[in-house]
Image 1 (cartoon, rainbow, N blue to C red):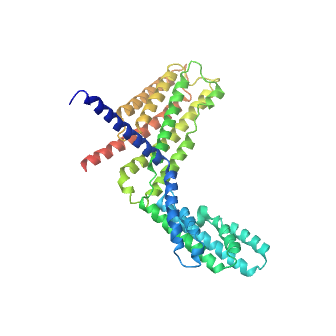
Image 2: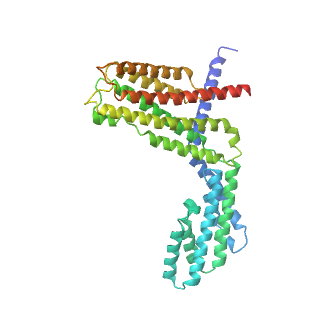
Image 3: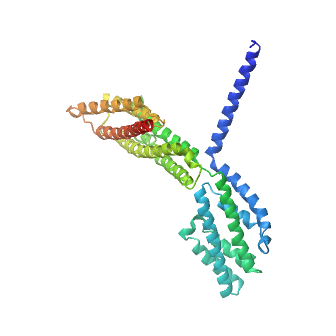
Length: 384
């Protein structure tokens, strides 16, 4: 190879690497927003449903727009919810149509019949079995009563039948490449891990700050972890539901298992760290009466918070990090030793330090159990 060819090869390699990174970034961004895929699938289903509706016999083909409507309703974020919401939509339309037909027979006057349809339809829309599509009951009833007045049987049949046909098309489109929103759940878990780590680091830094926070300022060091944990619960629940009757889920079994394990771990850690934070904030806000973390006890406690934060960071990895867990355990042991010396010193009062140490120990116990499960699973995998 000539020396003049080397820059060209280097440029080509750089371009390929840049292209691969761009493709990977685009794929991750796409997977992180499942609603984009939902929009594409709904569009495809609606475009297919409309010409199909034009092929059905009269009088149904006179109302082709109900097929795309059913297709859009059926195209959901998960295959299981797609089938469920399709059934709920058709059920709501049936119920609304029945209400309209009965009212039209019993009440011949327009305004009273309109009022009664709305009254009964809205009341029935709260039926739990209809879920979020209960609002279709009064909508369907009004359409059948007013729009379908000239041909109630034909219109009602077209409304229900074409919505059902569109829903079937929507389900089939979803089934071709069923969504499996694992990436949003992974990012939610990542955000929760960062939030827990930030909380622990923030407490450690605040304890040894040159200018210690005042009583009211300590409230600002109490992060809202529960809201982030709730987002993780929702994201993992959606991913779990999406795996039902999903032929693509088996390919991602290891990812799903890891995600489920991480979800249980970090939600548990969230509650433990929130409890720990409450202890620290409360004890620091009452420091005017006594200093529960005086002298070396404050320094050791702050260092323990940081070491535990590093262990929480390590828990996000597939293989864990034994060194981080061991360091966190040693830090808690050192803190327990320091608290023990304070307890036997008649001139010092450990106060809240005992509860803080116990809470930190529980956090590390949770992390250690997680690491031991990872090690056991890895050993079982190697044996298999």
